[in-house]
Length: 298
Image 1 (tube, rainbow, N blue to C red):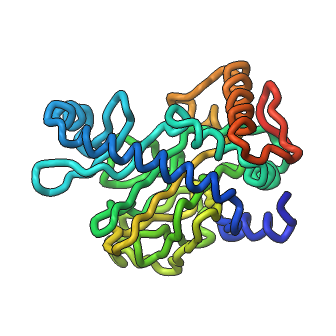
Image 2 (cartoon, helix red, strand yellow):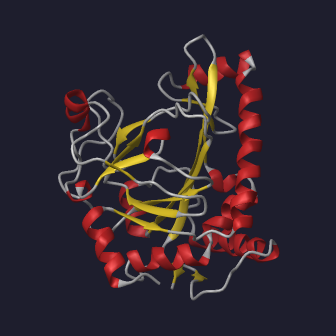
């Protein structure tokens, strides 16, 4: 479980870095699975019919409707794979890592013992030399850009229940190599006019710091804290698995349209099976976190 100092640090700054959480075998299994997805993404991105289908669905977000692999325009008429969504529907390792007992106990500490479920999940795959940037943003429900018309209106205040993304690092992440940056403390302001800030300052926003990590580290960052990453122009590959953990009140209030399991019985059965899969894979399952009908608790 987290210490009170760690909890207060997260509450004050909007992020918390835990070192050396993941088993080396967990990291290696995620690397293999991530590379398989990247290879699938490369092949699919070379299929003209698939590219047309993806571009037709939404011009500003190139995502295949069935595989949920996401691409950026390569500037030459083609596309380049850079991320995958709905990771809990893909290779088992991503569900198994989601249930790392150290992570679950930390989540429970940050939520004050309120039951929660893992939700969603994304893989960002930043290839050397041209890995796609992730512009400065806040996550749903705070995400608000003047340049985007189809998103919720800004929230004047931050929701009282903490909601955060958990970053699992497959290799070292450096701010100058496409790693994530944040502006500490901005999670307490509700929605922020990011467009105006970026227009004035560019990527280096006032107060921004790099959240650097090593392979096997885990980083929690509040969904309302300003965060983003620049392009990866280095010679190093950067792969990161992102997972949400949410209480039911947050889910109902802000994420009710997410394509996820809605029924408590379905959630309990799904994650109980994932926990058994984790045990069969030989990963640690010890710890005080249990799976109940209404969520995970510690």
